[in-house]
Every structure is written in C-alpha cells, then in structure tokens.
Length: 273
Image (tube, rainbow, N blue to C red; front, side):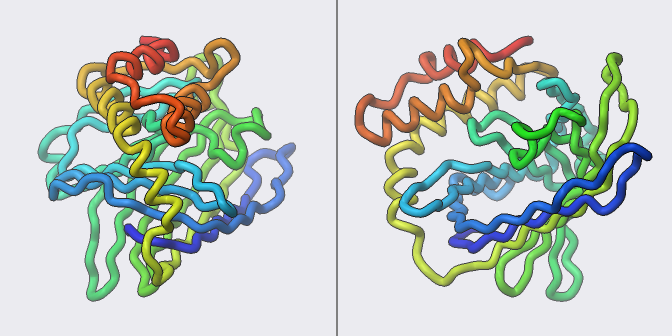
C-alpha cells in the first residue's frame, strides 16, 4: 500500500431512504498521491498520504494499522470521540485501522481480519462511524455521521478502498433519528512505476519531525483519555489551519520545529474533555 499512485475517487448515492430526500450528484475526482512508510514495527504500521497537485504537495490523511488493538477510537457525532475497549479475545488475529484527519487527529477507527484466499487479500471492517467526508463537510449540513463498512483489497496494480456508506441524522439526544441515503464509494490506487516525487521527499524531510510530535500528542491522549471533543475553531481558525501554518513556516525555513510542549499547547486549546 506504499509507493506512488494515481488515485481515482468515486462516490455515488444509490438509494434515497426518505420520501423527501433527493439523490445528490455523483462525485468523481482523480489525483496523484505518495504513500510513505513512517513506521513499521511489525505490529504497528503507519502510512502517510501526501497529495501532489500541480507543483504543490499537500499533507493528506494517515492510516495507522495496529495488531490486536484493544482500544478503538469511535466517532460519536458533534465533533466527539470515545474509546471502545475490546477484549483480548475479540482482538485476537485482527488489525485495527485508524484514519486521521490532515492535522493528525483521529478521524475514525475500526478493526477486522486480513483474509488471504489464494492470491486475493482483503481486509473488512465492521460498521464504522465517520465525520462528514472532506468532499461534503463544507457543502452539506443535512446529516451528521457517515456510517461505513470499509474494505481494502490488494490488486495486481495497487489496491482499492471499497465503501458501503449510510448517511445518518442524529436527534437532540445523540441517537440516530433517520437515515438519508445509501452511498457506494470506490477509491482506486493504481501504482506508478517511479521513485518518490522529489517535492514530496523534500516536504516530508522538512516537516516530519513536527508531525511526529503532533502524532505523539494524539497517541498519548488516546492512551489516557476515554473520550474527548474538539472545537471546530479557535479565534475563527480550525485546528488543521493552525497546525498547517506551523508546518508551512517550518517548510519555508521561517521557524525551527517547535517543542512538544508548544505543539501540545496549540492542540490543547481545541480540546474539550
């Protein structure tokens, strides 16, 4: 799953689940992504996705795979997350996959078994609550949670991310009030036979120490806190913008990498515990 990829993102609402809900226009986008191995200890694998858009590189999502994980971070809606503790028996033989936001905060996590049948390998999650996807979170406010079953399957040319998505509306009590639509998503990662993009390598070399400290904060929080929420903005600035500005200044050699304490202070200003 690491390397250089041409990526195609396809999402299409297939079924309206309410009489008054009209199916929205299908979404299609393509891009080039570099997927870097940040960590591989055998029981924890961290893959960083970096988008290439023209001459720019943009830090994208990160996936963290953990062997027999017993703490799963679940999205609750309303910018809130809660840790679900699972037994060692339930976790036996499984890999969890945590997907982060672009600011390295947890986005969603689930667990499942990698199955290998002949030369076909695939991993499937259980139903997983996710925040609104980036393609919709600034355009829609008519639903609260995307509940997905995620499948990652290896192909001769790379891998594919298959998604069965339900769009949920929460009531005032935080419970599901209704389902708007069923959506199908397919993301194709087709490998490109070329070395890591020089611009990507340069960006990651300059900023990886900063993002490692950001990740360390979230790893520590997940170990110590069973629930937390985040503010959408502080002084009208989202957390991804606040951290992104620091990373940009580091990349442009305007500042040195801040200390862990300085980074923690930025993130803490957005946390509601």
